[in-house]
Image (cartoon, rainbow, N blue to C red; front, side):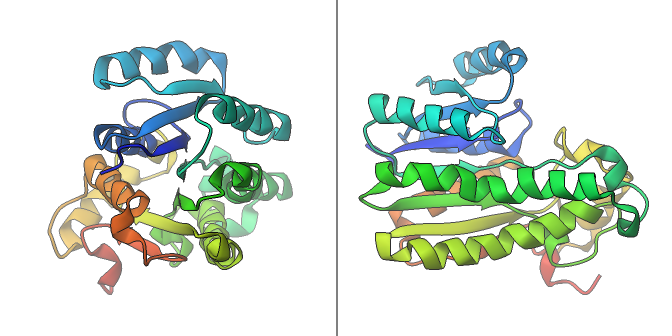
Length: 255
């Protein structure tokens, strides 16, 4: 489905991360990939993971998305290696643990700015320098969550950040449509990832969602990977500026 396509995935942390399920789906569909890691301590584990679970080895590049110079370096390398770019996956989010507990009103100024920079501004930050490599069009996919639309307990500042991220998707889609670049968001239901475990009461919330969804189950990471594959393929060529839910229908329910 993606033979001949080239793309990059920002945000692979470990084998449980949604970015990894997306990487596996895109790689399995024939895409040539690059992935980024933030710190050297992740490099060895990620390379071992790729060797064990992927047939074709992605290009692994260091990148702190708060550093414009590192972002530029990534795209310089991709230009030299790939020559073009067909899609970007943005699976990057962070908030301090203390800002994910208690009430949103107690969010610190520093914590708010940190969450917004890493979880929201990073999307525009990684798109802008990529545009010269996407002169033939392309697809950009980010990950959001229902907490950007509803007040979810213990999601707090991250919910506000996700609301801003979804708005960014719409503005970026409007900006880039004339270049045949589509921008969309996937909104998965809760999945037991490393970042999710940092949310107080996550396990009980996971049980609650399973009982309330129309499909009577939680979703799996592979389902998010398949949805990202759809958005990166020509099958979704008429879709841009959208938030697509992959949550077994939970978002349609009243509670």
